[in-house]
Length: 402
Image 1: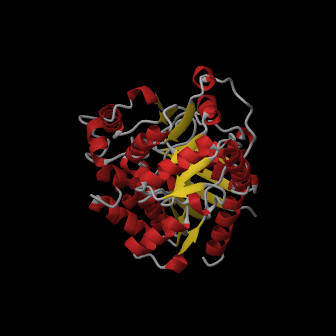
Image 2: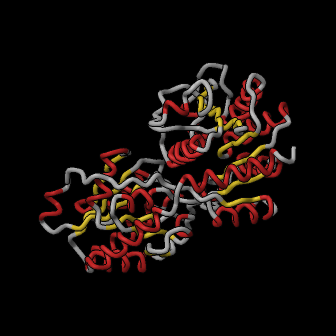
C-alpha cells in the first residue's frame, strides 16, 4: 500500500519567487515516482507547471493540488504583508501572524475531508497549519526547514513571533527535516531541538545536460570581457553587498570583467547605490528576476558563478550553474558546500580571498575547465530521488509507530 502524504507548501513553478518552489517541485516529483500519493496544499490557486501531469494530477495515484484562500507567500515579512494588504478584505488576518493562524484553521477544516497517513509542512508559514492538522487527525507531522529566522536576518533583529512559531513547530513535530548539516546545527543550537529528532535531507537537482543556448552576450565576450554571475534574492541573507565589495577588488587586478546580478529584493536600491558609490556602474548589469532559458543563457555565458551568502541553508543555484557547465565559488556558510567537493569555497566576509579566487579562475582557463567538469560530476550525485528515498524512510518509520 502506498503512503498518502498531505503536504503544505507556499509556491510551485512557474509561480515561484525563489528556491522553495523549485525544491517542492523536485521533491514531490521524485516522491510521486515512487508511488507515494500526495495532496499538495497551496495558499491560493494558480496554474502549476508539472511535466509529469498524468501522474500528479491523476484521480488515483499521484499528486493533486488543493488551494486555501490565503495571501501568504514565501519570503513575506510582517512589514511586507502590512503594505500589501492594507485595507484588504477583512477575511484576511490584520497582520502576518494572524494570517498564519487563520491559515492553520482553514487547513484543519480542509484536512477533515481528506484521507492521508502523514503530514509534511514546509517552513514556518505552514508549521501551524501542520500542527492544527496533526491535532484534528492524530497523524504524525514532519516539518521541513528550508530556512530559519536566523538565516533571513543574519542573526540580527530576529522577529520573536516568527521565532516562536518556528520553535513550536519543531518542538511539537514528530520529526524535523533540515536541508543541510549547517541548518541542523543551527536548529539544535538556537531552537533546542534534540539531534536525534533532526534528519538531514539535502536538496537535489534533476540533472539534465542543457542545450547550448544563443550567446546573447557575444559582444562582451568577443572583446575579451569576463562575466561573473550572482543569482538570488537581493537580501541580507544572500550577501550581495559582499559580492559588490569583492568586485571592487577584482577590478583592481582584472579590469575587463562584467558582473551580472540576477534577482530582486529589499536590498536592491542599496546595492545599486553601493555600485554607484564605488564607481563600478560600467562593470555591472542588473538583470532583474529571470528563469528558464533566459537564466540558463546567463549561466552558460558566465566564467564563474558566485554564492556569497551570509547564511544559506542549502543553495540550489550552484547546482543549476554546474548543470550549465559553469564552475562555482560558494560561501562556506552554505549547505551546498557540504555536497560539492570540487567547488571553490570562501567565508562570505573574506572579500579579499573571494577576489583572489575569482581572479585565479579568470586568469587560468584550465582551472576553470577542471572545476566545471568535476563540479558537474558532483552535481550529478545530488539527486531528488535520493532526497525522496530519505523522506520515505522517515514517513515509514513514523507511520509504523502510530
